[in-house]
Amino acid sequence: MNAPIAKPRGKSLVWRILHFPPMTLIVAIGVMLGASVVATSLAAVVGARSDSHWAIVGGSLVAAVFMIAYIGFGRLVEHRRMTDLALKGALVELLIGLAIGTVLFCAVVGVIALLGGYRVVGTQPADVLYPIIGLSIVSGVTEEIMLRGLFFRIIEGWLGSWVALVLSAALFGALHLGNPNATLVAGGAIAIEAGVMLAAIYMVTRRLWAAIGLHAAWNFTQGGIFGIPVSGTDVQGVLVPRISGPILLTGGDFGAEASLPAMLICTAFGIALLVIASRRGQVIKPYWARGAADGVGVGADADAGDALSAGAGAQS
Image (cartoon, rainbow, N blue to C red; front, side, top):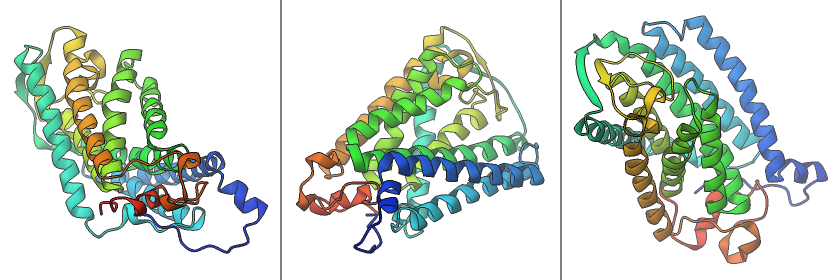
């Protein structure tokens, strides 16, 4: 549970404005834009776009910069303890997330293959994996920090879990509309299957590690193993596929994320996670519906996890 660090009783007007959730989000966006500039510069120095191991080094540097920026923002601006990125238990949660992401996408491709939409026609050497590993590290860390760690969490502490879930999922899908080969169907699929699932696993754990692992493994398995475009971007994988059939089955040029099997399998998993979160008391009410017993003050400075103090404890 992310308990806020004790703050002075006398809060200035500037402090209150800064900690009004929409303003907190604006400041967070500014911080992350700055982190993006620094990260991009570092990645360019080491050649993050290369086809060698430097792609992994570059991706790791980008992830590290975003983590440092997120921790700094949480400590210095939000005045909270960063338990959502605490190292205790991180490896286990990360591995669980990696396993879930791998299994889910294997299941998606398995269904597509059984229905005749995917067939392996060749293989490639393992060194084609360098770029997709780097990409998976970057997308897993940066997108989870921005979408779940910042947007979802801050909105949840203000307007409640369900509003935050809908808004963050919609934003996640909308952001993917700028990708190559994107369509409204693809954006909607990303919002429903991935936006819900990733927010739900954050709600269950109240930490980012499992979500990061799931996101990274989803991208890596899709592109690095099965050679399927990742959110519209062509990547090289160890398997060379022949993809054929209706777009509803295969997802078309955007990739299997936009397919009906992905939507059904991953949305079902996301709903199951939401049921678990609800049963564990991890659903947070809007600020106006909370009483003193809920343990959360109004505003972004009151971390969303504190609402769980009256119910089941947050999972660590």
